[in-house]
Image (tube, rainbow, N blue to C red; front, side, top):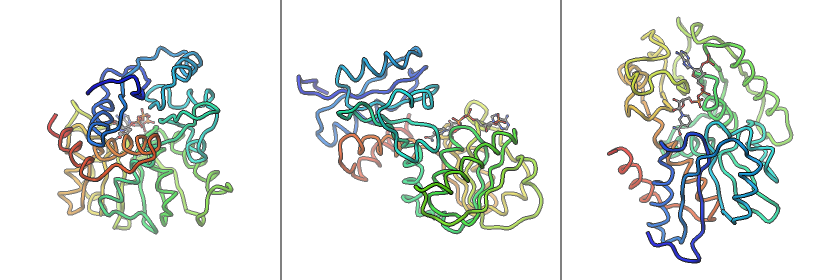
Length: 291
Ligand code: NAP
């Protein structure tokens, strides 16, 4: 990669950022598309006011935001997209004349993964396992796609309740165009036992994340007989215990690698006003799965 006087600068802020694979994704896209830009990590120690003012005054065109700043960054932006505001998390900043504008491409990335796999949420019974940041993104993405019903299941019921309330508030807001959706918050334990089949389940907890490959948030094998599609947001290991259980019971299972790639692709497209070709996405997926 050659840096010119004209090269545009992009990057990611977070703490830690040393593990990030975003530079690899973004710089590969720029190289393949012949776009004169470079993407670098910035370890950021918490003063977000100074950070955003510094990056803006240097003309950094776009920033990704990772843990632990996805919510606290919002007060430093000139505007936030309505869906990102409803979720309360932003992971993409775009340079505008007024300041940085915030977006949430975790939601867009997961939606794009579903599209690429031909999975539809519309009128389906959806279960979200977990109630952290990833679960929140999955739940709002599903609500936008008008499911038949949604259950948020978490070890800590209060956190699931919080997401349910935010979803219902969003569903009553002007920005939402769908019909009322039946949303329930429950504890994960209560999901076992008989129930309807054809479920689409999003595994959004940390359980099963490497090196704890043998763990799974639900171990009752009968539950998996009800699952048609299981999407684990974890991508390391490539096949989690949750995915194994879904497949052994006859369902289709997916990991979170495509979501990760697509959230970067969606940021790239917002910043550069381009469409990243599918063959570039496929090349990145192969590169990352070989790591
Ligand atoms: P988070 O905000 O810390 O939430 C963690 C969730 O996991 C909570 O619901 C927590 O339940 C639950 N949990 C943790 N340990 C548990 C245990 N032993 N038993 C039952 N539940 C447990 O984390 P996050 O940001 O949402 O991330 C969650 C996962 O999604 C991570 O593995 C991350 O790698 C993955 N992720 C993937 C992508 C992608 O692009 N593919 C993007 C974001 C996140 P409590 O509320 O009860 O503590």
